[in-house]
Length: 366
Figure 1 (cartoon, one colour):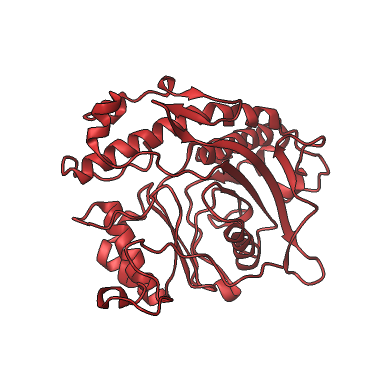
Figure 2 (cartoon, helix red, strand yellow):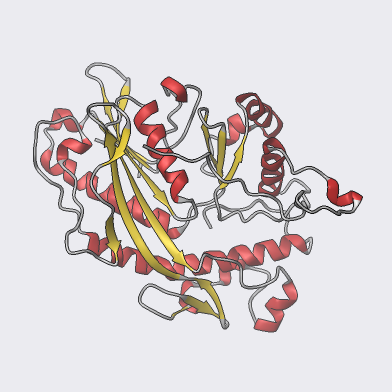
């Protein structure tokens, strides 16, 4: 085994730059009569901010998933402008494109909570497969977190996406592999976006028999508590020259699952809800549907969700997994101060950038 570590609606919401006025006002100045930016203009501004290309557009929150409507041709234009074919080989940012809805997503970074869920389940599956799968089958199984899927079918032809966690099976005597199972973790995405991901995987990848979503809710949703001003660092006695001096132990927990504070300001809200949904195909229509109800991981429910081994790999085995979800709850607690420190460091970096002192690239993994 090789390891790397019926939806409705009109599509995904779009993040608009706040310096563009609305068009609903009757009386507007000539400067305010500008049209809202197109999808490619929004994406260009976001990437300029991310890559720090002398951009004055600093109104996008790089922690949130950027979403816009864009055509395949416009995506190719962006690839040429920013050399994204090479950049996509790097860890961050990550890109996904849904050809059916003409939706581009850009993931600038990954939260500690997001990473914690993925690592927890990946490690569980590695141990499980080594324990129960025959050696010949185990050698054909691949658990991956960085493999981009770009061969989609039906209305999703032309799409591409990296699943947060995927399980693939190599065909006998062939390097070809087939996607069997995927996980998508939501933290800054909407539930509607996650639903559309379920449809993308189950309709566009015929070999994928199950897609799972885990959604994490932070209450209230995060907004940077401080202005981007280095003078504030001096006022609060926060090191302005080296963000890495900010340590997790500097942050104080105000509850079992947050919030988290530092210097009297809140950097992480309370993790108020974590739930899991399992999606499969309707055996009669072939359409994606949720299997069973939504299962709460936090607050913990009386029954913990488990998977059949046959849900993960094509085996005739009714055995159920034994995922210890209490271990995940502990992992999420450990992530609280990590995420708070990460956000504070990002605030210092952005403050330095706006002061003209830091021209480095945004570090999505910091």
